[in-house]
Length: 111
Length: 117
Image (cartoon, rainbow over all chains, first blue to last red; front, side, top):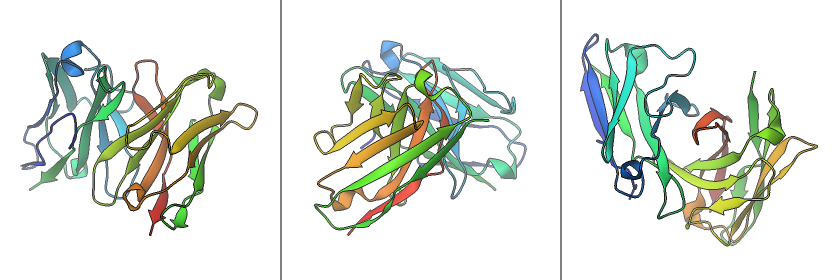
C-alpha cells in the first residue's frame, strides 16, 4: 500500500492532454514537502521528469508540466505522443515515516 | 556526465546475504547524498535507504531496517548496500540514485536484480 495514491492507468489519443493525480496527506505533500515526478519507460530505470513541484530538468520537453495544491499534486502531459507510453511515479518525503515515499504509479497508454 | 553502475545482484536463498555496489563517476561523489530504491517484479518503486554525503547519517525503510546497511567509500566512489537475512519479499531490481539538493533522485543506476528463492 503506497503512501501516495495515483490512478493505476490513464490513456489518451495522440495530441490529447492527460493528467495524473498524486494524493498524499498532512505528513507529506500537505506538510509542504516537494513533489517530484519520474518517468519509467518499459525495461529501463526511472528518469527524473519534474522536481521541486514544478521544475523540469534540462532536456525534458515542456509538454510535461506539474502543479501542487494542499495534499495533492498532478502531472499533465499535453500533446500526447507515442513515446510518452510509460509508467509515471510521484515522490515526496514523509515526516511521520521519516523517509522518502513514492506514489503507486500510473501507466500511461497512447491509444 | 553522471554515471552510476549497479552490480552485485544474483540468486540467494532465504536467510542469506548479498552486497550490492554502485560505482559512481562524472560528479563529486563525496558531495552528494545517495539512496537505494527497489522495484519488485511488476510492482512500483519502493524507497529502501538513504546515506548522507559524508556517510555520517543513514536512514532505512521499515521493511528493511535492522537487516540492510548502506555505506559508502569516498576513495572508491562507491555506494554499498549490505543485505542480510534476506526474504522472498526482497526480490526486486535494486537501483542506486544520486540525491539532488531538493531531495529528488536526479540520476539513477541501471539496476541490479536480486532474487531470493
